[in-house]
Image (cartoon, helix red, strand yellow):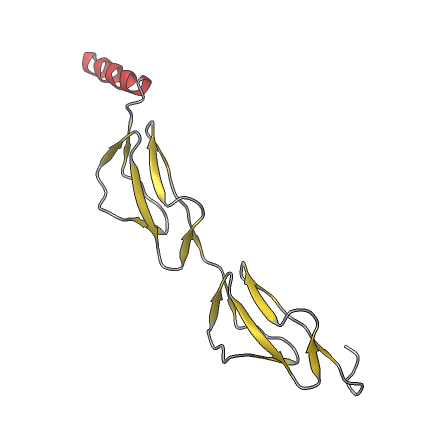
Amino acid sequence: MKIIILAFSIWSCQAVRGQTSCTAPFVPNGKPENDLAESYPTGSFIRYVCDSGYEFVETHYALCEDGTWNLPVCKLLTSCTVPFVQNAELADGFTAALYPTGSSVRFICDTGYEFEGTKYAWCVDGTWTLPVCKCKCPHCKHE
């Protein structure tokens, strides 16, 4: 019983003085840049790398604070499949199967059609913002 009280007293003193340590952290979809130790003192940083197909939400490191880790988050990169625009074709031979968020591709309207606005499609969070090709000839059906 004395040993338990002594151990609790030592742990309580360390916790009050902010000397609590953290065990090795785990980051889903990420791995540390270096091998992990069994424990880390308060104030320790560990740099992480997200797995392929994932990106950091904010920070790329884990921080031990008073026995608790503030961990980085690796989220799945969103992507778009090949876009389709009615009455248009992809320009410049774009052939990728998937386009990551932030990608843009250029279109060329078919003969007799013209762009209403931009000629670019933009992949944003897995969804395309697409251009529109409208008929410029009198023989076209009204769209």
